[in-house]
Length: 153
Length: 252
Image (cartoon, rainbow over the protein chains, first blue to last red):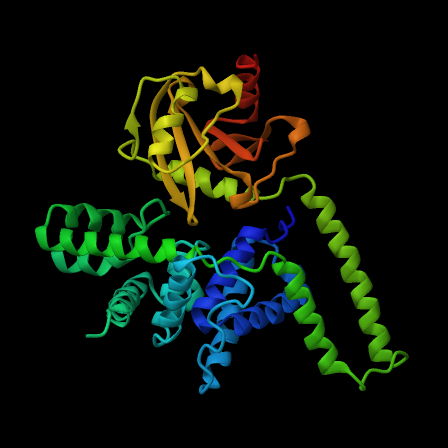
C-alpha cells in the first residue's frame, strides 16, 4: 500500500524535534520547510511509513546541525510573539533551549527519545549507533540536562 | 543480568513504549535493587516532567501551510532571475512535476482507502502487545460507568458508544501517548481492549458515516469510530470477520 500522508500529529512531533535541536522557532520552521520540500522530490522512494519517518528525522537532524554549526546566534526568539499562554509554555522553550545546547549525538538521541516518533531500536538506526550506545548517550544527556536545569546558586 | 548491565539498559526505558526485551529485564532487575530502583525512579520522574513540558510546545496552527509558504519563498529566492521557461531542462522539470502531481493524485486515491490518523491507531494497538495486565486497575463496573474513575486520573468527559457502555469491564487505566491522555478499558468479552481519546489529539478520524472502521494489524483486529470528538478504538486478537460478528452482536 502507498504511504499515508504525514499526519498533523506526526508533523507536530517533527516540529518539536527540530525545535529541540535548534532551540529556536525560526530555524525549526525553516528546517521543516526545507526538509518537506525534499520529501516532495523523493516521495516515490519512501514507500514505507517507518522508513519515511526515519528518513525525515535524519534529514531534519542534518539540517538542524547545519543551522547550529553557524554559531553566534543562539535562540533569537524563544517565545512566539503571538502567543502567551502561561508558565508551562515558557518552561517548554527553556527546556528546548537547554536541550539544543547539549553536545551531539547525545542531543539528537534525547530529542528523538522525548518526541514520540520512534522505538529505541529505530532511534539507534537513525543515529547509526547500537542500542547499547544509545543507552549511554541518553544517560549522559539526561544528566547534562538535569544539571543545566538546576537553578544557579 | 547484573547491576552494571541493568544500569546501561535502564536509560532506554520508556513506559508504554515498545522496548527491547533486555530493557524490560533490566527494569525488573532494578526494581529489586535499592540503588538502581532509586535511579530508575529519578529517571522516570525526570522524563515525565520533560515530556509533559515538551508537549506544551505546540506548532503554529497552520503549520503545513506555513511550511509550504516558507518552502516556496526559499525556492523563489534561489531561482529568481535564472529560470528560462523554454529551456529544455525547465521543460523536463515541468514534465517531471506533472508526473509527480499525477503520482500524488494516485497516492491520495490510495490513501482514501484508509482513514486519517490510522498510524496512530496502529501505535495504540502495539501497546496491546506489551501489556501484562498489571497496568490496569481492576473493576466490575459496566464500561460506560467509568467516567468518574477516568476523570480522577485526568481524562475528562469519558464516554463510550452506547453499544459498548453496558459491557462489563474488568480493568481500566489512563496513560499518556505522545503527550496526550488516553483512557483504556479491558472488557472480558472477547478479551476486548478499548482505547478512548480525543480525535483531534492524534488526528484520528474514521469516517463518521460508516460507523465503525474495521482494520487489521498483525495479529490484531480493530474497529474505530469517532463520535462527538471522541475516538473509540476497540481491539482483540482475531480477524475482520470476527470483529464484524462482534459489532453485529452489540448492535442496539
